[in-house]
Image 1 (cartoon, rainbow, N blue to C red):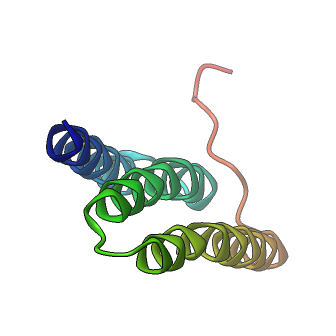
Image 2: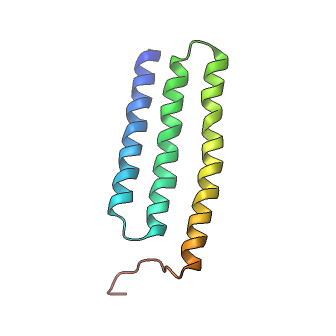
Image 3: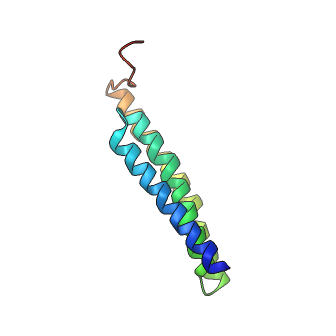
Length: 100
């Protein structure tokens, strides 16, 4: 049963990574691209790490895997903020539809 749950988590994590990549390629501006990467990739990372933690040999290895996620969340938030702030400082405005 753990094997199947681990496989499901890894597949779901890969699907979130794929969705984040599609968002990165399809969204029109830096702000919406950051949103796609921050949301989808962080959730994908959580699912992948949970799936790998289920496969770990020891509790210590599983805990180390699960501690990667909050560190990546904090780094993603900081880097996303820095990129958005720099884009704003450069005068890059958020995308708006032409009919608005």
